[in-house]
Each structure stands twice: as C-alpha cells, then as structure tokens.
Image 1 (cartoon, helix red, strand yellow):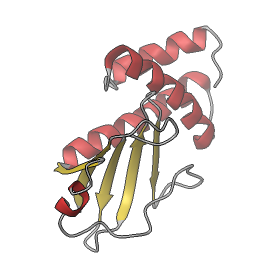
Image 2 (image 1 turned 90 degrees about the horizontal axis):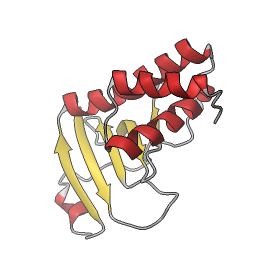
Image 3 (image 1 turned 120 degrees about the vertical axis):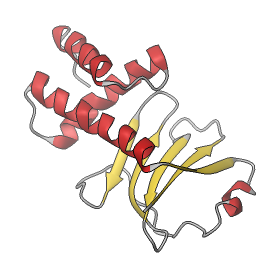
Image 4 (image 1 turned 180 degrees about the horizontal axis):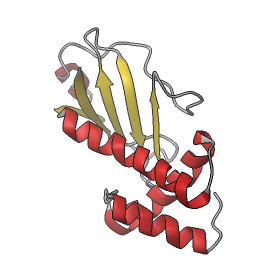
Length: 147
C-alpha cells in the first residue's frame, strides 16, 4: 500500500480541497478521506457501506509528477501512520458520537461527526484529537445539537 495526499486548489464550495488516498499495488484507491474547506470530512473504503463518496474508478499514475503538472493539484506521498491517524480520528469521533448520543446507525453518526469536525476545524485547523472531539461532542449534546 501507498498513501497520497492530494491538495486541490480551487474555490468550489462543494468539492474537497484535500484528498487522502490509500492505494493498492495496482494503484487503485482502497480507502479515501475527502476534506472540505468548512471542515467536513467524508470517507469511503471497501468495508464502508452507504458512503456519500466513492473510491476513484481509475488508477493513480505510477509517477505522481503527472498529477503535479496540473497547477491546480499538488500530490505527495505521506506515511501510513499519517493516513491512519486521520482515518482513526474519524473512527474515534463516530465511536464518541455513538457513546454520547446513543446512536447505532453509522451513517447517522457520520452526520454528527461532520458537525463536530466543522467546529474542530474552525477552532484549530486539523485539531482532531480525541479530547477535542469528546469535548465538542459533549458540549453539543448538552445543547441538544442535531445535524
């Protein structure tokens, strides 16, 4: 597996500006996280059902400099650890939402998680640590927040 972070320079509100991809030996995505400028984080993977985004149906080029030739993109390799840290922060947020809100439905939990990520993003960029996520979730719960 390899891991790529793609930055997309644009002003399109409903498109991601960061895309984290895990790619297999054939260069196809197996997991992906899309991050939007408002803090929304969407993810998909082979094991995730009913995701609102899809894995790419074309392979990444063997040389990511092909992507970087287009000035609206900047792709670079990242470590598995960096990818997993972000992936796990989303899983942790969903777990915290399930625990605090007593919701079992993963797609419903992801709606709450996105609200939490938007707030975390607005107060600290990429501060998605468990303590931050839990504090935001508890504060929203006290205020009867629903997405």
